[in-house]
Image (cartoon, rainbow, N blue to C red; front, side):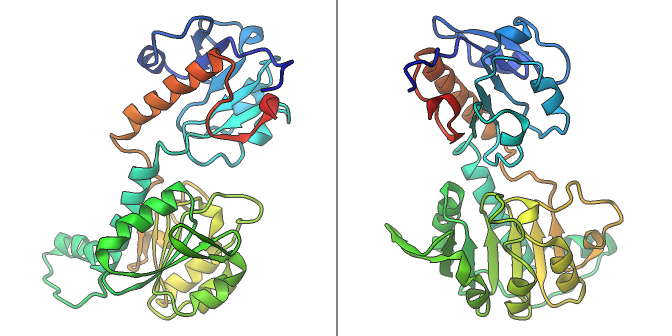
Length: 318
């Protein structure tokens, strides 16, 4: 830690319930309640060192955060942190909740694959009219799966795919070999897409990954391929994907979209070969105890002057 940096002595949490869950607080640190919308309770703006953001994203947070003159750290409750560094100055640290959403997001990725590849979505629609339509669907076993993203959630998805006997190819930002084998680079995506039957996207949204799954990658996929996105909406080119889905050439199973929420009149809603869930990948019952555990540990580290967990921008800890 920077020797000139004063340890964090105060933090706000977005709800009283969350504050109570992480109490008792370590000696030497104070806490208040602030949803980054109204006025903080228990602390003045000038006293706040760190802010735990609400779970949902907010477009008006910057104006509120600008009222905190001594802010040292933002703590997200999400794995993704796109847009957060831009809310505050470059000297403010930003920490994610990496690890908290791993299990939930990985299980939803598997759910979306199975629902699409086994025709569960069609069965639900047929139930409304009492239609018995028995047919053969691709299934997940023996499918060639292209996993784009090899972080914590990507690894969890890969582990959960093992019992399904798929042929898995992993893609990261650069080509390398890790403890699980070969990782291909993102520059190989168009070539790799040529034989992929399922593409699962679970990579962070950065300037490098925006529209990573673009028109060229989608066009390279074989007819009937499935695109699953549990990352961030803009990682996939929505217009290009919509065109392929509406043409009936590709299927999609999306927990995230761009824009979000998807407008009610967007054609993807009514496409028979598309499944859309409303960005609920990590929002399960497992989230509550896991975020509480992370925040309690994080507050302990801050009180002790230790480097926080999950820093995506180091700020004072550079």
